[in-house]
Length: 95
Image (cartoon, rainbow, N blue to C red):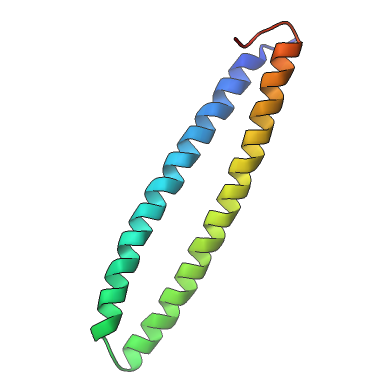
């Protein structure tokens, strides 16, 4: 039987990296949103309207990405917990 500690360590590291990625991306997007709000307050006309629609689409796609990433993170939590339990049950591979 394969040593599942390696799989568990890999999943845990992936989960940590995914969390850092989402945190950093969210922080940077929040900063960009703040800049957009200040810009939108003074930008006017047809070009501003076109840009606004593009920004709204971008924001929606970003939110969808975050939702999907949170679903992946939740699934990883479940798999990591199940693998930890399996390791404990199969002879205490993980301590």
